[in-house]
Length: 409
Image (cartoon, rainbow, N blue to C red; front, side):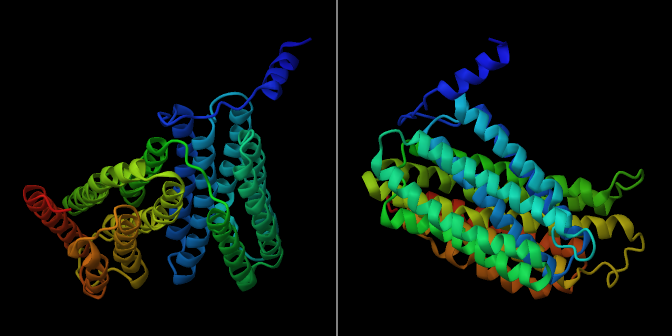
């Protein structure tokens, strides 16, 4: 028997390594996250190439597809280790499929000759990801009949979602947008329906909360990457306005991290203390649902930042009217931040079941700042947004200390 045959035999004869309460995120899962974030970078690049309202909507659909691809493996990794045996082999193939999806993202919305192939590559690669996940999850369920029933329910809605997904790829244009929106809605809601009817058992709350926190932190790095993308690689592009915009971007990213991190710890503790199926439902709602607007908001913010830096780097007149934000970059910059803050509010309301007045109204305030930012020079608009986030962090720190001293929740 050759070495290759022996290795394949070991993989297919392996048994799932079911996780326990103390299981934490593995290095292999973090590597999987890097492929996911590469795909997010491609979405940002796609929207930057043609900044229109339609592009923002198309980018949103691709973001949802990528989120589902990541989310299902986060749940799988909570049930059984994905860095050993058959799970590692299957996840590696799924990782390659996600990588293919990322590569064709800029071309999947094109029309005309040759436009069908990228769309079919994305759809087929996504189906491969979902088939591998469902197969591995069913295998990892071992003798858990409740989980196997949940997987079968989810497999039904997932398979149904493939019909409009394939049809959308075939038709293209407006039909593609509508059919893909329907497909992803069916796919995403299918997991929630399966959760309500049968339930997804959560084996390690610490692992699950850590996975979501880590992927969000990595995604926040996209805002910093967008600074370099916006400036470009040409020499002489580091003028004082550009350096100031870069520092403002860093400050905004730090604020967004801070606004999430403290609350994420509290939410993680809440997840660990919930009993039985209430904990399972909390994980599905607060994390599976609540974290998608956090990720999507981060990517739209990164796109807005890139547009600001691009304008500063390539318009050397520094004339205020010429440097004003267009509506689409302004919507991405302020709307992305509002979406992030709304996602945080959703996450907290579902996990700790408490929102301070500042956490509740913060998304609306950012939306109100949007028309003001639209008519400001781009650097001033970024500065105004950063000042608001810094003020929000300070406000929540003060409120938090008062609550700690008084013993109120």
